[in-house]
Image (cartoon, rainbow, N blue to C red):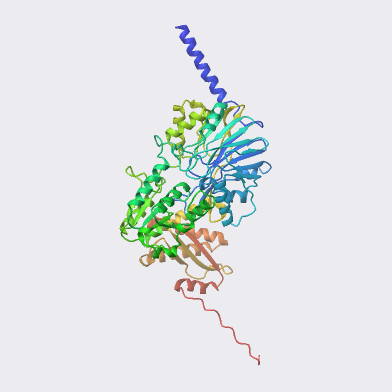
Length: 608
């Protein structure tokens, strides 16, 4: 009995020591290697991962995330580069794993903000990046090409690359040798034993597992999907069979970034003696770059210009376009709405969605599909009966294979929402990675690699979202987004008030103008009551010395509770204070919406 008690005590002490070993010295030291993400954790997109040692920062990828529906007017979401800007004395090197937007889309914004010493990218990604920089009139940035035989050496880091299978050519994983141990970043990957492009480099992955990897950062996008994903070759066969069966005009929508899929569609069209028309700017760019780099081997004679479409029999055409996610301005949405310049749907047209809806886009896709059906088109989507799409990301069994090949001591799931990261953690535990050696981090969390061991740190770096509106890289503030939300939900009320500051009085009854708040014709009594309330409040306010700012606050504090009590809505109230007697004419013009008459000047005569 005493022996059992003694054994339990030893095991308990061992667990305490292991916990102490894991959590001691959690503040980084100068000799440590720091690993953190500025984007890509707790989200799909905006991938940006950093490895830092002393005066060097290795940045892996610089992507964007596309905004959700509630981010009104926002074009892109990018990482906050503030931490990199503050580290201005440190050398920074950017390495790109492949050319998808969530990995290269942020490069123009990063180059305008942060001084980079070097950029390394695969050939296809370089073509896409240069096109992106040209569109923004950003020239003079040198990008060095890498392949699976390349080696990038800095003072503290040595990077090697290995080929992976993904939905875009020239996709690589990265091995980073640091002074404190080895790190592998998988990039985006899947295991396809019959790929359309090149094979993944299984030998290198197995070799890395043999030499010993301290920390693995691995793609988590499809952590919730069981088994292996469908091979791209099966999708190619399905697309070809669909084209052979289709009698009329064929419209195929897919991701422009899925270069191998686009190539398969074009090859199937040529095999079925169909002429090809491309619609959508991103699709046109990818096809042009794909043909220049030899990834798409289709001759010019197989393409038609949009103007030639009307002169070719319907059964001899194949239209390839963007819009598979129901994007409002994409080619397929305009075709479905009947607003496309060159295409009008006719009964008998067949529309193929060679894609699956991204989470959150289901409603938009369904809306487009319904409109296509209403126009008489036959719509085909991916289902259990048809393999019209496959993913470019590893499912659970493929993630297990990666873990078994690399055999990491420590594991950090990346590139996914929190649920995906947690599911990937569970998968790693199944393969034998100890739970205490797996780190489910958020953007800004810092891991410390110290003498081949990994620790969590109390130290964090700034890693917020920056909302980009147009080309404004300063970002849209949350206050602006809040105002846009209020405008969308409750509308706007503008109050125009004319005052004479010298006599300290209101010259005329205020004018209340509503936009998106209430229907003006049915709410005249409400607006007139609001005008009287404002006038009374301002008259009381101006009995004493006051400022323009205080007058505006008086208008807001009077109208906001009044409108809420009457309508249970909170419109944005914008006071406009006009000074002096000359303002009366402007007030009258606001009321009647008539142009202001300018005073006539007397002609100068020779007698004068």
